[in-house]
Length: 276
Image 1: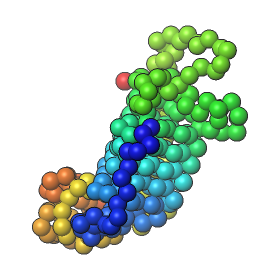
Image 2: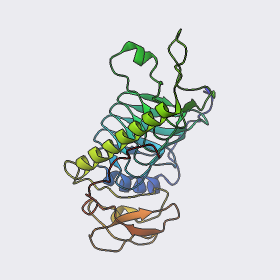
Image 3: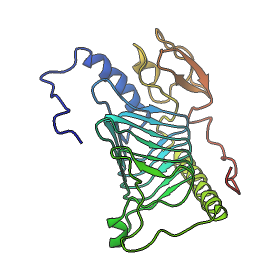
């Protein structure tokens, strides 16, 4: 950490009004969550993303397809970025944060348990980060991870984020055991995909769930009003309400994708039975 790395602003950015208009459009997609910008960065969402009420996603945060962020979780990407891979989930009360030059990257089909803490680290695919729980040993070693590919390393100092308990030698594990663990973690990630789809298509059905890339264009607010669907371009919004949502890239171009809340309530595919 660098104590002198942040220079405070004395007034809003010159383009603050434009940025806030784009932010307002994002907030309409998840009206019961907290979505905010940091300077010129704001979140980017894949398809069928769920932000539960009270979840906070701030700044340079990118969420892949079918990601779910649950009640009270916080993802704050200000000093660096946060990314969460497809079909991963961040469960209730967890905190994902960054350091100066130290992003936090979470892979695909990874489960981050309740009240977990991830700080400026990299977590591979098909992993399970244990929750804080009520076990004081687990709270003390909250960065311990289930086995899987990629592991987790602290991006700030390069040391492994998962450490064995003091006084105990690391437990050897066979490749078969690792593959079995990874298959289980991926199956749990798919369980949460099904769980978030149940929420999204029932109690969250009035929330707009469609793809948005935020570094976009003028006139987005009207195009992404709650319930609006159709194609969106950098200069205008066209198309009546239908089965597709707006998929927008950083250049401001767009195409229709089947991500609208009404059309996308479909049963997800079965969970994998073995690690890929």
